[in-house]
Amino acid sequence: MHAVLLAETSEEYLCGSAETLLAGMVRLGRKCIPVGCVNGGCGVCKVAIVKGSVRKCGLMSRVHVSEEEESHGVLLACRATPMSEIELKVIGKMKKIIW
Ligand code: FES
Image 1 (cartoon, rainbow, N blue to C red):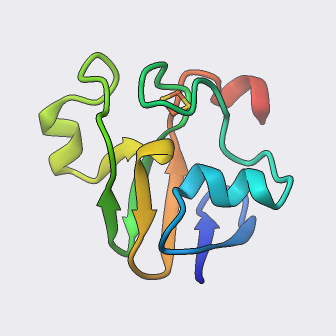
Image 2: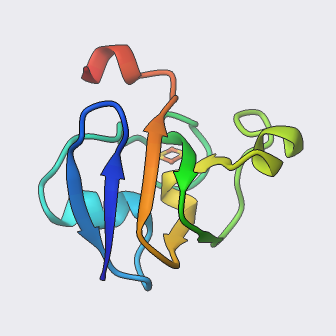
């Protein structure tokens, strides 16, 4: 299990290295990252990794995450698993609705 910290709210949850950042949050009944399609297609779970390393799993829509963004640590939380402790910022479209 790896700790996942949300930089702006200081919320934290534990996520296994075999589950996505989004799945780990949902398993605990948390709502700190917006949840949409859970399939890499809608972009609402878009996050920026501030600290730590992740592994991509599955396809991410380039409509929502460009190659340049990805090179700067931006990805979809439903398409990445933690490899270490993580600190992230939510930057998806629904951020204002959730917060
Ligand atoms: S929930 Fe839709 S892209 Fe992650």
